[in-house]
Amino acid sequence: MPSNAKIVISQFGGPDQLEILDSDIPSPQEGEVLVKVSYAGVNPIDVKTRAGLGWAAQHNKNNLPWTPGYDISGMIIKQGVGSHKFNLNDMVAGFIGFPLRGGGYSQYVCVPENELALVPEDISLKAAAAIPLAGQTAAQALEKAQIQSGETVVILAGAGGVGHIAIQIAVAAKTTVYATCSSDNIEYVNSLGATAIDYTKADYLKDIGQIDVLIDLVGGDVALQALNYLHPGSRVITVPTITASSICEQASQQGIIGVGMLVEPDVTQLEELVKLISAGMIKVEVEQVINYQDVSHAHKKIETGRARGKILLNMQS
Ligand SMILES: NC(=O)c1ccc[n+]([C@@H]2O[C@H](COP(=O)([O-])OP(=O)(O)OC[C@H]3O[C@@H](n4cnc5c(N)ncnc54)[C@H](OP(=O)(O)O)[C@@H]3O)[C@@H](O)[C@H]2O)c1
Image (tube, rainbow, N blue to C red):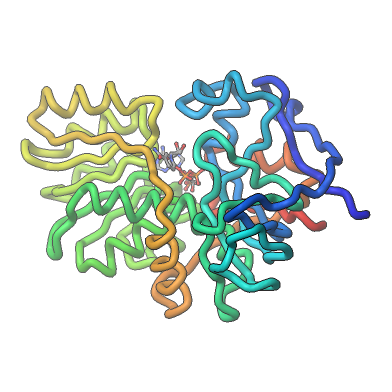
């Protein structure tokens, strides 16, 4: 019988805490399906949680050993009782088990079928694993900002997993989009329809003029400094949870509307994103696919803060 390799952390700490364990292939319970996972997306929240930082670590500290991973794509190979949404061999993707269950860094995982979206043939399983958490964060941040056609939107970290999708949604909504990135990513960010701003230059936000909405994907001092270029009544959605309260507090002192957020899995929204990818309206960038045996390398790459688009684990390598 084939075994099920999965990655677990038994205690919070560095990338060396990521261990590969062999376990039995699980059986789907009522309403669940068994997915043979092709790719698992690696998100900054996985890395922060592994390190014991942030919201998900707080909620998972009594839940170790734990298998990270909220983004998967793969094939349905078994259906539990009462599971009718899909057929065997369907390709699916999902933003699964958020925030407690996780489990995506597995070769086989049982998932409630209502957490999964069908992946049509014209979308690669790599793109499908890259989109769930980051794509929904981008969509929900822009929804919270209530962006309107004609407004000016600035996105901090336009080249990252969330940022590259947020740019494309904001451009499609007919806003004028500026997005910050390093000099290496200027051409890439411009190719998405934004005007790239090199954050390594001094005073890099000063020439934009009136900024209606700031989508902050960096947090901390970078976001606090960016608030100085907004005006009373501007809106900021600050996405990294660890610094959200200090940024919202500073925003409020400046008369800016500041809102933090925690992404909420929403399978209907995922299905819509899949349709947009299928229609060529969103292009998903996958910088690197790393074999699951090298998961610590994937976490180190995310920790550099320099990934372009997404990093995936190949779970069947
Ligand atoms: N609250 C929630 O529910 C939620 C959901 C998803 C993500 N998040 C958080 O949101 C943040 C972004 O997530 P992500 O998945 O997009 O991260 P990511 O993919 O790891 O972001 C990497 C990108 O950040 C850019 N970057 C690094 N420092 C920068 C700076 N000072 N200014 C501008 N860009 C900079 C890099 O661009 P260069 O290489 O060009 O420097 C790189 O492309 C993370 O903190 C994550 O934990 C929160």
